[in-house]
Image 1: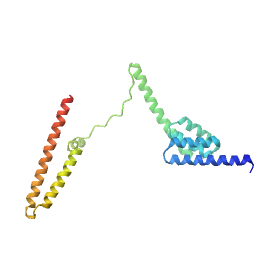
Image 2: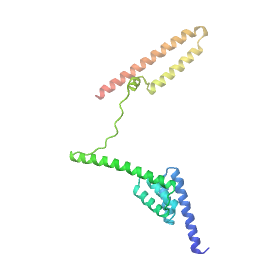
Image 3: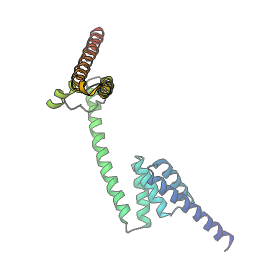
Image 4: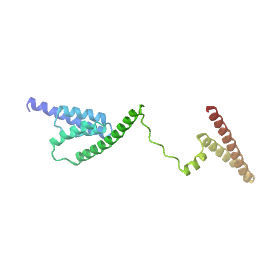
Length: 204
């Protein structure tokens, strides 16, 4: 090989490595790294079709739709017949642009409305769905973290007491343990609820 041919071969090898690294980063969801390595490949070999496609895909993932479209146009010039991957990217880009245009239109209308009323526009978060009847019914019954810990401790303590109780007294021990555990839990719940009510009243 001549010196020029050898240099071209080395350059293409480096471009191939950079393009393959871009593909790996795309698989890992690292769009910025994928874009950087694809650009290296394209800078070295401007007509590197795989690198151009990977740069287009990375640009799409980064939300740079103009760059994505420019690279797709470049790729279509190199490959008049699009393969399945390019067609999917074109379709994804079209959907993303339509969605972005719709969102921009709504934002523009909101800004104009705010400007007409002489106020600053503040984008509102999506409204929260009201709780269902079943959720409202069950919410007060859901124990807190501390209540769960207390219940676990009472169950373990009751189990130990019952286990070590004499066989002939076990029925009475079971009843007493259940009653004692229920009473302790009820007192704890009442006290914590009273504390919460007092704290809420102080805030008001």
